Image (tube, rainbow, N blue to C red; front, side, top):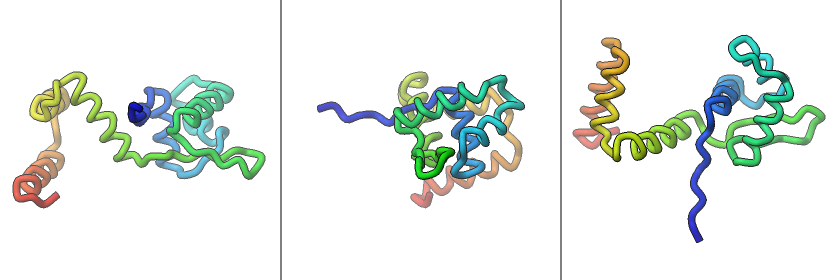
Length: 129
């Protein structure tokens, strides 16, 4: 039997996950309130997306009260690793070097970001991460 892969969220699902990661366990109404300024999405659309996300295993739902409470099943970093890993394989043939080079050539990194990247690389080189 084939191992079921972790679901990859769509752009709209990522927007919802960002609200859940920032606010913690949240109702549909609260998610809608957070997103209505940046997206022209109705309440029922957010509700349907959260229901789909629940079916996909992206969120957990607490049904103990009248207003269901949703929270992400995976943390932000775990989801980012999943998405980057998928992108690394599909777009860069598994080459971390090509991924990093494209990322750094697409958007200029600040001095602080470059310093953090340097620390990370030094830690990887010495076996400390």
